[in-house]
Image 1 (cartoon, rainbow, N blue to C red):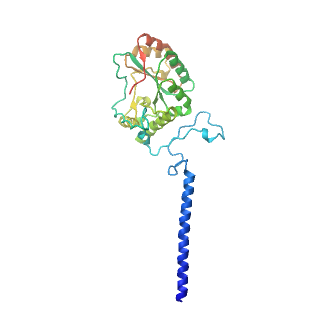
Image 2: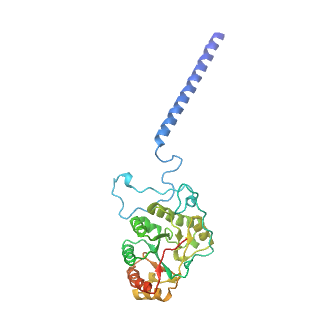
Image 3: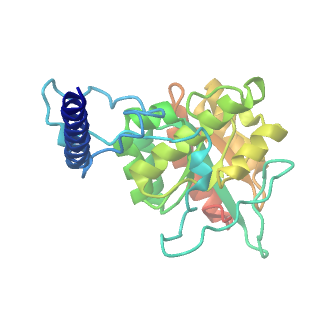
Length: 301
């Protein structure tokens, strides 16, 4: 009996030893295969497609198009991760600059005039596939630079127009993603509206926006705070052409000429509806402003 017990004990120990050894080898093999499967690919710890991606470009890609030609999806690990990214003009070798201070109101006039007759032209709600290219041609012909506050949905549909705006030296600003009234939204949705648009601009143009205009110019303390956290300055206007109401080219021209003073920020639109009157008005009033000694400039931070 004692001999049989020894035999059973030895067999038990042998089986246990073989089991441990097999599990160790299996674990190493699984670890190696897992490493091989993820090397050069997405981090398995991040869900595929996490975060909000912009709407597909107009027309869409043809079925079966190679995946390599698709634009990379935007991904956010947390709802406010965008504010952790370096600000415009910085490199990965430098420390991120401090966020702008939280403003109590949005800028409605240019600062640092130094006695100059300067004015800023701003255009909201684009880009538009017809009116934006025509407006860019007018501005190019007159040698003028402006600021375009783009709506994220439109920019996602026409990213080539963002490239065209930036290539001509104009400023690309943030005008939210879906043009919703910010004070009516919870803070999480305000952050999403602004951060999605900033991410899209950064991905397409190569630098994040430094200026933001709330839809309808409607700011409140939470939206101003989020604007600052995302590295942007808020901007409103001092001259409202009311071109959105299509009052006629002559009335738009008159609104600009009668109300523009040094440091003025002029509100116009290149999207959100038919803007042929705006394009014609800009072509008409620009030489008249220049005759009066005004220079159109980009806003400086």
